[in-house]
Image 1 (tube, rainbow, N blue to C red):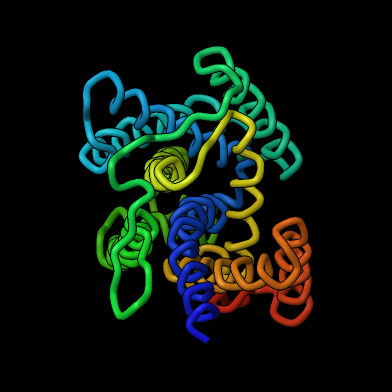
Image 2: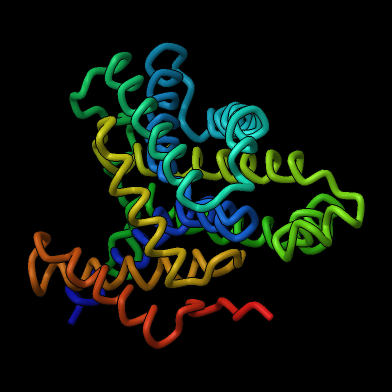
Amino acid sequence: MHLWLQIILNGILQGGILGISALAFSLQWGVMNLINLAHGSFQILAAYVAMVLLQRLGLDPFLAMPLVFLIFLAGGYLLQFGIINRVISGNLFMTLLLTYGLDFVLANFMILLFTADYKSVNTPYANSSWHLLGFQFPIVRTLALIFLVILSLLLWLFLEYSRTGRAIRATSMGTEPARLMGLKIPKVYALTFGLSSGLAAIGGIFFGLSNAFSPAAGGPLTVGAFVVTILGGVGTSWGPLVGGLILGVLDAVGSVILGPTYVNIITFGLLLIILILRPTGVLGRAAT
């Protein structure tokens, strides 16, 4: 019994890393109707940046996190405003094609700089755990879950009560009414993409602290964020938290019962069930 409780606990804590990744993905999808296929590569790039800051400057990843967040926020803003905004009003295929090309460029750029070998962000606490009541709490994954709760709360407060957040929510409901209200849609989109890029960078740092990574790891991260977003509900602040916990627990339990090779069967089987029974996700609401 104790073993199974530890497995479920591991799944819950793993859900923190999955949820932070999906928080960024869901924001882009919910506001701009943009399925960003380069999302995972953004996270891996952030992991490499954290690794370089640690190796060259001795800067701990948690101390570097605000700096990396601001770098990716600014980079995402400029990327959206200068490039993606030019096709965002077109059909979905065009944005998929553009972000797929961006993913290809980022992956090869990282191979050029860091090679295709697996790397990791080595810190004294990366593989350490806290022990409480006979259970192990991996430090990085525990902090990731705490960060996910805090980030979800801050994002909800930002979207609900700030003027900029209300502008983002208004734009997500329809660009034409938002434009008639005087909102500058390209700037709102650029800010949304920048904010989500910063959140993706935080998720990437946590991923790099808890896993070995390479430039090819971006694809699975994008798929995971997509599944968690569907489970929790697109465009909701708390959906990634719920979706991440569900997927984390199911993956942890499924890997023990079926083996790690068949975990994807559980992941996509659950996705299929959710799409059939509740297409809006656990916390999502149908549009009116």
